Length: 65
Image 1 (cartoon, rainbow, N blue to C red):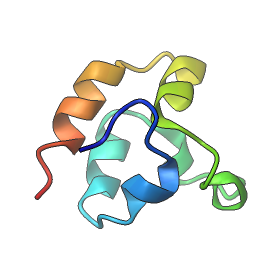
Image 2: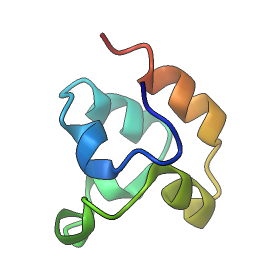
Image 3: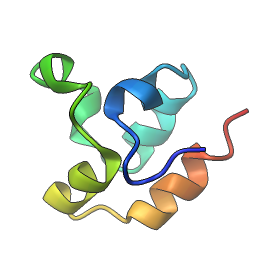
Image 4: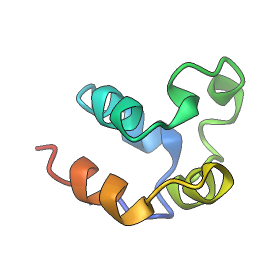
């Protein structure tokens, strides 16, 4: 289960997550710098930085099986 404390690295380990991240406007999907920080970047921080709806993002991500 993903939470606001889940790292970007944990999320992208699931291939289906890319479409969901893009749907919610997470810029890290295409950011080259994210590759260097993916073990540190947390969903909560990313959502706060970019004004994203964390609850909606988590709801969609947690539907992945």
